[in-house]
Length: 92
Image (tube, rainbow, N blue to C red; front, top):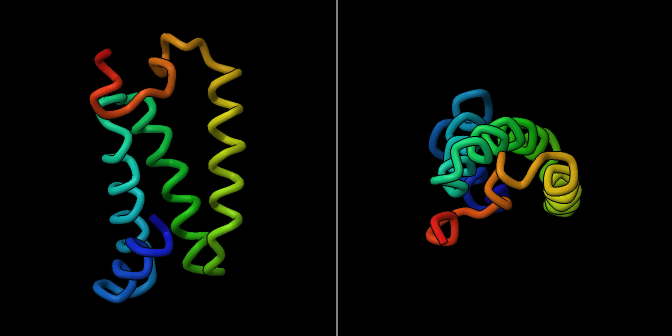
């Protein structure tokens, strides 16, 4: 997401808050229809997109995404996030 969408958003709208909001929204939409997870990922997308604009590094967001996923999976009840499922798997 950062390497492709963030770079294109910066080309279209320049670096800054608008391109960060676009990337964070795209990231959250990818986690639908799981609304609680989409809200959490919007917040994470804001952080990761703004950090990537300051220092374009793909390894840091990848590692932190993995860590946050594990922390969420083990700290919240599975019913709250529906087992972190997204897309068609969310319903089945």
